[in-house]
Image (cartoon, rainbow, N blue to C red; front, side, top):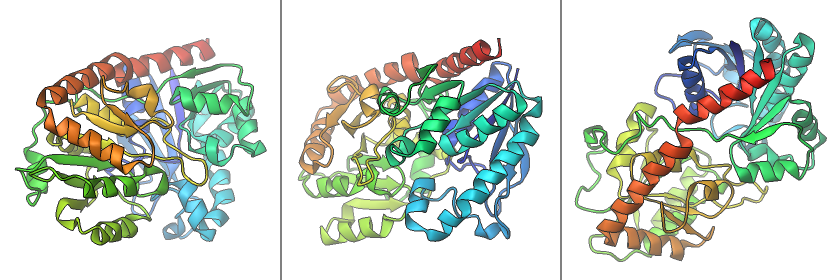
Length: 398
């Protein structure tokens, strides 16, 4: 079987985690005997064509010169469209280029698998032209931002099969569209890479100024509103343990300066570090070195929230206990008090209380860590999720 995967987010260089769940899905499908072509937008400096672990990767240009390609990547398409008029102007060029390149690449494929609705539009149109079935994977963001837009309804109803990253995303989709075939199949985690016994020396080599004698709190994600990092920073100012916990936040995005300024105003710069970009191959060591992982997501002003929370799964696979907001797809992952703690979104005091509780109780940390690992192994490993996706492919191809 040959599958053409369409995506608007994909790793541009080795070690870059942008769109990492798309390449992980492709890797595990290849292991199951599927031939995979990936079609993704190009970005300045990235290769146009390469082979990664048996995956044929093609990146298409949608603006000339290539340095003008600013719609995709960075803070993500929804945020880029919101913050940049130039990004809005690039949207029709992206869609046209994606459609035309899909026609070229998918001719020899048995099936088209599109991630997110923009790729989904190109996928369903190309599927009509080529007579190929189309699977659409929805990760959440567009459902909230484009809820009243007829475009999203058209894409959802024209796809032959819709996959959702969480039951929350599915519930929102069913509010706006009558789907014929659908299923919740979440992105997975490679449990061979993310595990509790990884070598953490990589972490200490990269972060020599992180104090080893203090409890370590880790957070990771784009610096955008819905990640809720401002509430975590405020929570750190409420912690009075001795020694004081130390927070490290990894990621990029438009709110980074604002968050740095918040830490300065709260006078906690001695217990907060904003990390440079963390290469994907180093991530397991960061999770394993941490005592607590926190995902303080909220519902932003556009109505967008966490579709699932793959970073939680990665942390849990490393047996690091998690504290996360009870929003979106997070509740598919965490069972409060069993494999982590759920808190009210936007509540710094609750975040601080749960961090304190985990740090103070070693047995609780171990128990929650073990339960987290079991949750991932049973329900969220890529070995399991890729097999489910392959069954959907077989059903459509016949």
